[in-house]
Image 1 (cartoon, rainbow over the protein chains, first blue to last red):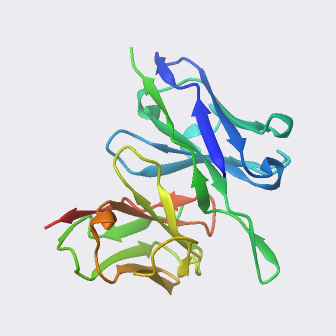
Image 2: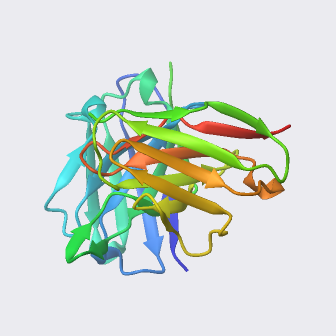
Length: 126
Length: 107
């Protein structure tokens, strides 16, 4: 059974830092792109960042570029999100999500999320 | 960035009703669209990918259609378990973006 379990959320002051972790099990972690998706309280979903299987490619939404860093440790089946210079608008539940990696007509397609963790709440407030 | 716009934002319906949610992209995304269902306090659940492919285990009363810029999610006969918020998401180009959501409530 695929499982994604996030941890590391909590209350942090504006300008502070936090590191989120996601422990993966039930699948070959090193074979999948992985993403972080967030949801502010009462709001919709926002994709934050993703990382290729070997960590060689990373992409970010503009609002977090230069402040957040996504990384992974395939030996530990773990995904991370280092969040620096946190702002009130970063307050959200952060979900770890697996990007489905499927071949369509011989082309590998990524980008939709077939498994999600339960989320971890990050609150940025003084 | 590609903007995704869902309509309606809220929908009230009876059990047994046929329900349709529309998602429009600000530019063509071919068929690179997914739909998710989210219930309060829970993570989203994948329903449909590549615009019309049903994820394993998802009831056949749900279906998706469309390509280019206009897409629909249809529930042929609304069941009590279907009352939730639905999101579309494009994965044609970065950044991946979601619609604002459609909340389906009991009438």
